[in-house]
Every structure is written in C-alpha cells, then in structure tokens.
Length: 423
Image (cartoon, helix red, strand yellow):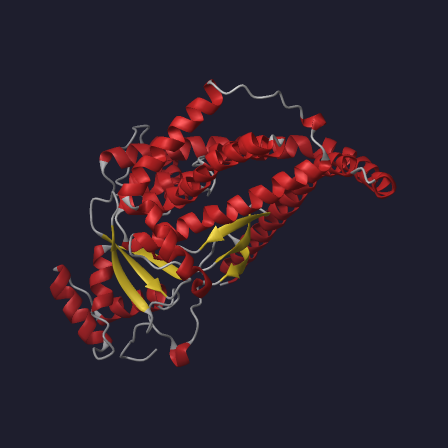
C-alpha cells in the first residue's frame, strides 16, 4: 500500500440522525455502498487527504483524539477496515475486497432515475402539508365509513372467477408501482436523491423496490415519511377503487380494496424488511436495526454465560451506545424477532415432510387441469389449482435456498477452522 493513502473519489461523509449517545456518520460510496461510522473513525478519515503520509496521519490523529497512535496503528486501520470496504482507494482503483451484502437479490431496474424524475417532481406535491393533512383525514374517514357503515356483499373465495382474480392482480400490480413512486416522491420532496424502481428477490420471492438510499442524509422524521410514502400513495387509491365499485358495481374493486388493505397491514410488520421495519428503524433511530438486534442478543447472552462461568454474578448490561429508550426497544425487538424466526424455522422443518409428500399430487392435478381449461375456457379452475400450488412452491424454493445458504456457511466455517489449525 502506498505511504500516502487516498480516499475513494465518490466518498461522501454525512452526519446521521440516530438515537446513539455519540454522533454517527455515513460513509457513502456511490449508490451501492454505505457504512455507518463513529465520530472517531470520521475524524480519522478526514485526515486522509491524498497528501498526508501514514506517519503524518497517525501524528494528527493522536492530537485530535488525545491518545497515542503509532504509524503501524494507522496503517492497520486503513488495511483492515477502510481498504476492504472501499473507503480508501486501492491500487489502480481496485474494487473493495469486502462485498456489502444486500437484503435484495437479483435486483432488476425497471424505471431509471431519469424516467422517474419528471413524475416525482410533480407527485412530491402530495407531501405538502396543504394536501397531506386533508388527504390523511379523508383516508381515515373513508376507512371508518367503509368498514362500519357501508353494506358490502359477502365474498367467498370459491365464488371468485379466474378472470376476476387476474383483474385484481393487475390492479394490485399497478398499485404496487404507485407505492414505490410514493417512496421516490417523498425522497424528492425532502431534498434527497432517488434512484431507479425495479424488482428483486427478498426471502426468495419477488418484490418491487425503490432506490432511496440517499435518505440517510435526512432527519429521522423525514426518513420516516419516506418509509410511509409508499403506503400513503396506496391508501390514496382505496377511495378511488370504492368510487369505481359504486359506479360499475363490479366486485373486483371490492376484492382489490380488501387485498390492498391486507397487504398494507402486513407491510407494517417490523420483523421483515417491509415498510414497517424501516419505519421502526427510523423512528427509534437505530440504523441496521436487524443487525444491531442480533448483536445485542448475542452480546447479552455471551456476557451472562461468561458471568456464570466466572462467579455466577450477573454483570450489568453492555453499553450499546444508545439512549435508554432506544436500548430497551432494541432488546425487546431482538427477543421478539428471534422468537418469530425461530417459530418460522420450526414450522418449515415440521411441515417439510408432509409438503414433500403432497407436492407431486398437486403438480399432477395442476397439469391435469390444463386441458380442461383450454377446452372449456374455465380459467377459474386453472386459478384454483394454481393458487393451491403457488404457496407450496414458494415454500419449497425458500427451504431449498435456506438450506443451501446454511450449507455454504457451514462449509466456509469448517474450511476456515481447518485453515486456522494448519497455520
């Protein structure tokens, strides 16, 4: 490594509004890599200006922090932390060795930033107080009126025709695109850049996404509005669907309202990386909430196991660098999320044998229904068999991918352990 380190040319250092007891910063490199760093690391990175040598950086850093740092310490920070993460520019502009993981897989952009900018420049007006406050009041009043006053026909899933299901899916698809436009428009409204809208894989099933990674520069309340923006845009569509139902007397609009409201309630789940997760993370002020919760959970038990082994005296809880309310929320979130995913894994393991036994029969029934559908144009029969096959197929894919990833991690751990023993 050169004795004069250089920062990545696209590096941005931004303060983050969090619940930490000390100021946190975001090291942002382009649109793909973002790192939360401490005040101390921020001061260290600022000393790397492409002119100072490692020795000069160590001297200046010692003066800033009031602690003694040798050139070897500064070089270790650069090589072990900053260079692998791409903060320091490698030789010949080499890519970082430490690949940043994303919760989305196989991201496929559908609408570029350039295509969306004229649209979000107009739709961001929906977040102005003069429109937002009355709109939320109308949405709230409508839902109370719809579910408490309106007489609605009873709906049985068996009575829904295949064509109606396809129409509902189409309306939901369009509303989901509008949902993502809500995130992008809110991002534009509060002064942050937004990227593309596309599709990706989350937990091995397809989802839409909007690239709003620039929101970390915003205040917590503004980030929360960006999180809420997607649901807000979809809620704006619900009264419109009801008006269409009244004018046309078509039940597909009622089906869409029910399905849309159900999906919005599900998206509030803070345990999965849907809108509710990001809302909780931003409102409480804990970035990387899932990762921080797992770290807190592991550290909590490690400290207690160590205490029991030494003296059976419970040591005080470790300092997580958070304000008291945020710390209590983090421990509660860690407990609930671990119970949730533990139950989910238990359900998968218990259900796997019966699912494997019944799946071939479901596939054969689906294939046998295809000639009848073609001959009689009875798409409701096809949708019935397809709906009974869809969830088991998704579960099998999820199980396969999950077991594959576990196998890869176990193999890598064993390989690393074997390598350590040899050295």
